[in-house]
Length: 259
Image (cartoon, rainbow, N blue to C red):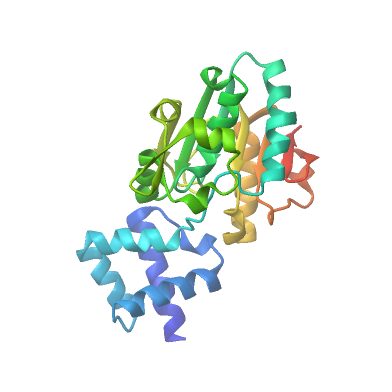
């Protein structure tokens, strides 16, 4: 079909230009999202839309915004974060003088700031290397700004809201003191090599958008990036079936330990 060839050529050109491989995302979801964007600008084909992207940097940035999923909030699924704070972080701190933690696909920053607040409450933020990465440079800028609407804070414990945020012009701003402990960096999970020896990798609510082949690739990459005994913390719809094939064992619901 002409429509299929049109989209396939678009996928090839995007990979050549950006190293983003759209074929590793679930096609129906991605194609639907990008078709809506293309039609919004009045382009009848992806061929026409591609030419516009090549000539207009702002359209490329809009494309990148649309294809990445930037839905996040602090303490998303609070009961799972409680397990991390009350069980796993104390275990890690008992066995390690320093921790190495990575928030992968961190979106607008709620997740790494949640990690930073927890570690600060445990008195361990100064003993932790905390990396936060995302594909989208625009959401990374928002994360580094650290400005949020109140709805993002609905699950933040009251003591943390009081200690780590200040209100300004209707927004909640993360304290500068907390920001200094997080290194934000642009990264393509599917294409780039990973650092190693992490105690904890948090990658939540992202894998559901990838194909099964892309998930297998990432689980293997995450396992190699963790130190033995390190944990991978995934989202509430991302249970790993047969974790042993990647060198993991189930440590708790949505937590997987590298064997």
